[in-house]
Length: 301
Image 1 (cartoon, one colour):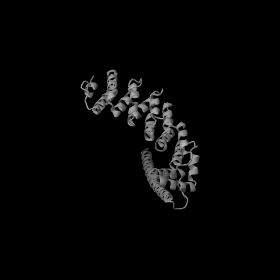
Image 2 (cartoon, helix red, strand yellow):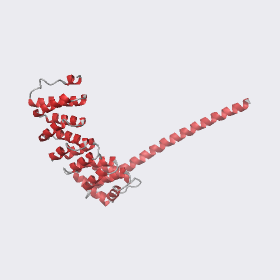
Image 3 (cartoon, helix red, strand yellow):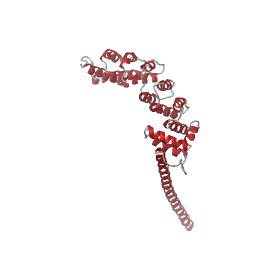
């Protein structure tokens, strides 16, 4: 019996030591394989990047991607295109066209995978392909939120003033987060003040919030009366955006409206925004509001 127990113990110990050795060997193999894979991927990327740089200079034969996937080539090309001048982008676009790569990008715009659709769209826009800008507005209706946001960001850089209305429509219909849409419109810098004022009356609180924010960010002093009305909006975030914009505009005539809104304000964030706006407008007028409470007094009330 004792011999059997000793044998069993030895067998179990041998089994665990063998298992430990196997696990160590597997981990070492994974580490070595990962290192080799990383080096191979780095080598592929460097080779593709060299070809793209040559293409941007109008030199070199058509693209030879070797073992690299089209997705790898696309990511490298996008990174390079976004850091190029317009002239260099156009030269590289012609080279990519000769390499038949832009046909691949065009096919991607109808792919099932959202990441592929966004890659294809980005490549077509960066290489200024015909119809690419129109495609951007279509992609604001894409079923995937990441693709819609990507299209909005691209419109911010490559869109025109008319596209600001498209972005606002996407915000109103909850197809775009207000923050993404606002940055896009801000980069477009629409000259149409009527568009901003119209969206201050939109049924969508997100659109009203963005419009109120952009009026101040773009310095549209002529729209200050519309912001005075927005100080009584049913949505607190719209009221806060209106107050912040009025502070950015700094018009002394806004002080009475801000004070009235402050009298009815509830909540620390709105109170602080209104108080800051009052002081900003007073600073521009050259006189401090002697009867206005301090921020500390407002926060403690």
